[in-house]
Amino acid sequence: MNLWDATLNSKSVERAPLRATEEVDVAIIGAGFTGLWSAFHLLSNKPDLKIAIIEKERVGFGASGRNGGWVSALYPSEMGADLVTPHLVQSIAEIGVFASKYAPDANFRMGGSLSIARNKGQLKRLKNNIGSATFLNQSETLSKVQLNGALGSLFTPDCATIHPGRFVRALANHVEQLGARIYEKSPALRTTDHKVTTPSGALIATTVISATEAFAKGSRERIPLYSLMVATEPINEKLWNQIGLSNGESFAEASHLVTYGQRTKDNRLAVGGRGAPYLFGSLMRSAAENNSRVHDQIIAMVRAWFPPLANTQFTHRWGGAVSVTRDWQPFANYDQTKGQAKAGGYVGDGLTLSYLAAKALADLILEKDTELTKLPFVNHAPPLWEPEPLRWVAINSVVKLTDFADREEAATNQPSLLAKALSRVTGN
Ligand SMILES: Cc1cc2nc3c(=O)[nH]c(=O)nc-3n(C[C@H](O)[C@H](O)[C@H](O)COP(=O)(O)OP(=O)(O)OC[C@H]3O[C@@H](n4cnc5c(N)ncnc54)[C@H](O)[C@@H]3O)c2cc1C
Image 1 (tube, rainbow, N blue to C red):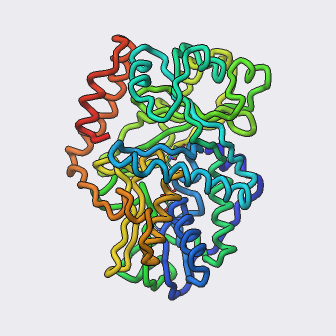
Image 2 (image 1 turned 30 degrees about the vertical axis):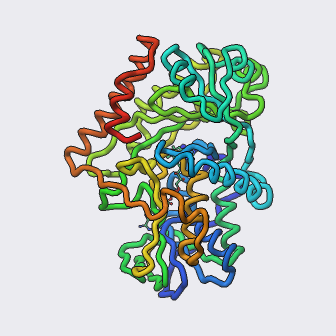
Image 3 (image 1 turned 90 degrees about the vertical axis):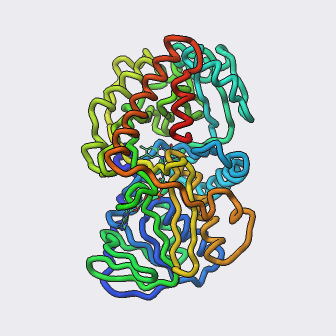
């Protein structure tokens, strides 16, 4: 079960489905961070806008309610990152202000983030990519986190952690207070230029924003890639003294196959990783979120990182899909003539990016020419993914080869050549 759903402070508000035909200025499909931040930015600019959000399940059902809780300045692609990163840093601060005013129980904590090398190949790679981060040697790293085998790390202060389940619900409550209406159990069945039809109603809108991320169906624009997580029982202070993370740092091993962890406010470790297979035809299945092989691998990895946790129970296992475009670039696009807008393709970096993309989208829709509307992901059309079965073969090969690249680094003590070759193929 999802840790965040299991540790909500109060019962989730249940909202009624859409049961009529309504005319609105903006119809939003999807009540995750993209849809909700879009409503937030639009209403913050123009409070009299009539906005309705339809969600096929419930608020936060998608990745927004299941993620690792890193509010980071990470950008999925190197291309354009220099232009976007300062805005991501600014966005983290703005999300922090929102959290302190409207989501105090979502545990927003600006603890920074550590990317930790456990072999010499990873260490060389970190040293070659210091950028604006600070390099910490072995003893400096171990003073922050006693991760077994740590040789050094990069530390950046530009990362906060949150309880995403509480945050997304607080955001939904807030946009309702600003005047938006949210309908749950209301899947969009058909979308034409200015009309969205659900099983028991419809929205007629000047603008329709599609904020369905990995659930976007029938398109080769992006694919769902599963990321799985586990969480421990609350860990006692004696064990935490043997682990560290006392400032709430988020952390990851500097492997090619993505990992991410946070110490939660209630003193658990919540850790995630990729490696689950891509499903043919971009299918999404709950079985893929509960892949016990991958969950067991993540647990084994956490125990290898932190030997004192040998007898600690892992009480929660879950997963969700991130959405990946062919060039690993996100997008925030608006077609004024059709009245259609969409944002997504954030890979695993959507917590801050969804805030920024939604803000850019609001500027576009309100016809404001701003710094944000010039960012590289704005009105970006990613190339299409290959058709099946090529896509299935290629993506699953890359997932497997990425794992091999990590083994290569551990074995050779050099940055992986395979990973370098793969990055040319994937564009990542
Ligand atoms: C396990 C995991 C860990 C992650 N960790 C991090 C992290 O630590 N930091 C970070 O920055 N990012 C992380 N991410 C990515 C991040 O969570 C997402 O990028 C972000 O939440 C995307 O928000 P969204 O609103 O675009 O999509 P979603 O949250 O997926 O929302 C889309 C919504 O649309 C709804 N929907 C779909 N189709 C329809 C339809 N036809 N009609 C109506 N509604 C529909 C869905 O039910 C869903 O609620 C992680 C993701 C996963 C899965």
